Length: 308
Image 1: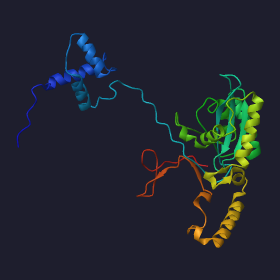
Image 2 (image 1 turned 90 degrees about the vertical axis):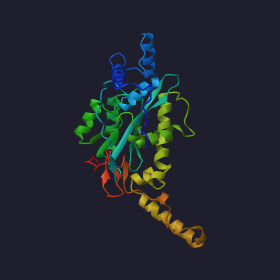
Image 3 (image 1 turned 60 degrees about the vertical axis):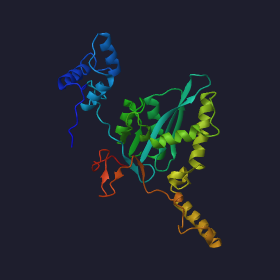
Image 4 (image 1 turned 30 degrees about the vertical axis):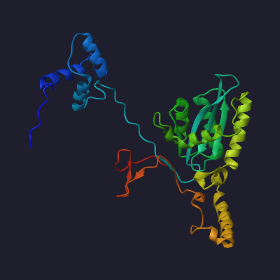
């Protein structure tokens, strides 16, 4: 078998080291090879082609970043589970457009993640930790103190006022990772339902208009809207323990229909969409199908986690 012939135009090892040192020098470490190539030509220097520069960088695993970079500590992925109402509350603040462009009202909304019941919805003229704490105090007095309160990392959510209130009540605080909206899915889903509904106005004429709208929406969301995540029950039925009786009544209706027209039904007694979940998660850990172990983000067995 013939030995591959070395190309005559190939750089020597010494020349390749010189190119790599130039590319990683203080002058050029933050620049792309194309810019380095042009600047060296302007200086009257030619080392090699741009493609050769990239080739040398790839060989030395330097294609992406050649400069020193700050490394931020990895944020813990929040893993929360609720098996009944009043265990885990999630809350967030969304903007409501005011009567004039550039003006907004702030809607503070807290939801029970198991039942999807809105336990608190306040509209204010501005955002602050003090107003958030006032809402929580009212919610806890009416619906009970949860085990966990989850939120993103907004200034009000991480404020000292809120932190002190929850600490005094021995409520565990949980926060989303920075710039990860999926860590607060129930609040985000609620806001999408709020703003994509047919009655959503382009602007609110006053804070009273915004408050009336939120009151009307909350009543509909809690008592009329059927949620796919809780067996097509209303949030109020699940929150106040009425869903079990409703499920029994639905099963009876389906059973009568099956007797009348058995050919229209399959082998499943009740459609899966009508099942009420036994637990509700924020970031449920993945399960290794081979071992059955619960895995964390790194693929190993999950560490102890904050659960309701």
